[in-house]
Image (tube, rainbow over all chains, first blue to last red; front, side):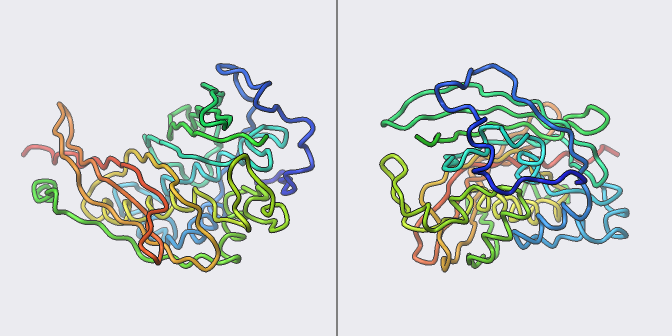
Length: 156
Length: 148
């Protein structure tokens, strides 16, 4: 990864947008992120996914993928890796209500990932403040890896 | 491999392995996903109220469910030449340390399009009490083999 990641999500809280400030359609600031094999395998271990496509170079090279890949859900890591510390996705108390993702091609170790992201919608339902976010991850060649939306309940 | 898609019916079931949730597994998921939201780390913070919701203690990341569903689907699809193409999920109930959860799926529909073949799979995650904690729908593509 290279750059240090701030694990204290309270630290930059004052700089983050709250629900009232979020403008649907406005692009979010994002950061390029080099996806390493180490980061892929750490994610895989966290969900007990030890498939050889992520761990065994010989197996992966002889597969239809032609080399080691990341599992589709690697966007779980990429979402936080590609957004700066003052992004509202890191606001403590953000509750994830659901997500939908479409997968095009797998991310691979060594890819420098780029994220295009924005809030797409915000609304109030049953006294809860919702924001819908919209995200597309690209690899170094500009190919779409995956795209997705998430529904979060914002902290009050 | 080509025949696998034809064998899929509404009775086709998919099952992933059980996953034991602990404070350690949640902490490891923080490190692996870089999601350090105090919802998953700070019991004192979680004693508070979240609008109308009270959790009472730390909870597992909703996306940990997502990762377990994806693992189940890729294990199933890779072996048959398929590709996991889509996943939509909702979190229905919080998952806490001490819970054991398991993803499940069943084929809901099949569709042949101009260039490929698709299975729609209903997915869910249940805890050790049989309570649903996540539900959703996935799509897996089974490309036709080249003619010849």
